[in-house]
Length: 399
Image 1 (cartoon, one colour):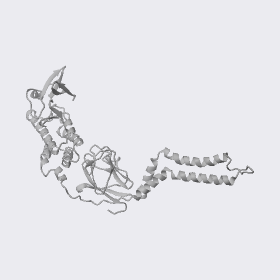
Image 2 (image 1 turned 90 degrees about the horizontal axis):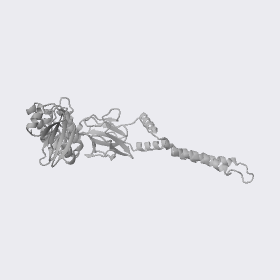
Image 3 (image 1 turned 90 degrees about the vertical axis):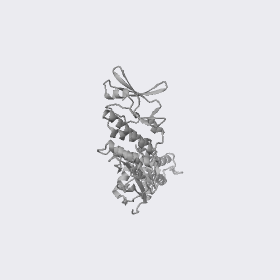
Image 4 (image 1 turned 45 degrees about the vertical axis):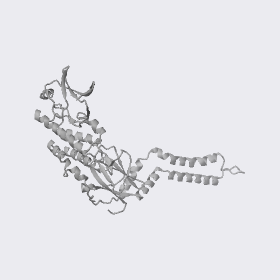
C-alpha cells in the first residue's frame, strides 16, 4: 500500500491509492461510518481509486507506543478493540480479514485514547500472523521492567506461532489478562527457584590444546615486531662495536677474540631473553594460565525449573538459536540467531548483548548492546522470554 499523509487546513488525512474495481466494502464505507473505523472518502482519479481517511486529532499507534509508557491494561484494551473491529466487519461483510493490523495504519484518538483502523480488502495476511507482527513491534517499545506486561506480550506472541492458533484463542488469552489464571500474572508471582543440579565442567587436555591453538591463530603478524627488534639488536650491537674497534688490543692492534666472543654472547643472551619475554605466544599462554587459575564454573539454571540447565563449557560462550554459530543453543521464542555472549576476564564473569532483537536482561535491566555487565552468583539473566538464574562456583567445586 502506498501511504501518504496530507495536511489541508486544520485537517490531516491519510491517502491510500487502490485499484479501480468496485467492491461491496467501498459502498458500505461510502454511505456510513462503522464503529472503530476511520471516516472514509473514496475518489476516482485517472482510473485509480484514492481512499482518503480522516486522521484529524489522531496519531498513529506507532507514534503513540513510541512516546508513551503504556501498561498491560492498555495493551489488553488495544487488542480487545482490534477484535471488536473484526467482529464489526464480519457483521457487515462476512469477512474480517480486511482490517489492516499494522502499527502505521492504526490510529489513536488524542482525546479519548480509542483505537481506530482502516479497511483494505484483500490486502492482509490473516489475523493471527498480523497480530504476531504487531506484538513484535510492541516488544521493542514496551517497558522491559514491567514484568506483567512482558510476560503477557511474550506469551501472546508465542501463542501466535503455535500451529492451529486461531483468533478465538487470542481473544481468550486477552480476556484472561485480568484474572489470576493468566500465565503472565502467574509468572510474576514470587516463587522459589527450583535449583536443578548442573554438572561441573572439567576441560580435558585436548580441549585446552585446541583452545590454545585457536588463540595462537588469531595473533597478528605485527605482534612479532618487538621480539624481532630484540634479536636484530643482539646481532647488530656486537657488529657495531667491532667496526668501532672496541675489540682491538691497545698495543698490538690485533683482534681480542675472547673479549669479542664474550660481548657477542652477552648481547645475544640479553636480546634472546627480551625476545622470549615479548613473544605473543608466551603472553597468550601466561594470560591463559592466569585465567585458568582463577577459572570459575558457570551454569545457567532455568527459572521455575522449565527446561534444561546450561553448563558453560568454554569462554567466550555465545548464546543464540542458530546451531553451528553459537556455543549454547536456546530454542525459546524471540531468541536471535546470535543473542548474547558470556566471558571471563580477570576472574570475573561477564555478559554482553550482541544486538539481539528482543534484548538481554540482567536483573530486569536491559543491557546496552556490546557493553559488558559483571555477573554474580544468584543473578537473574533473561534472553527474550527465557529466564535463568546464574550459578557461579570456583573451578574444582562439585555442584
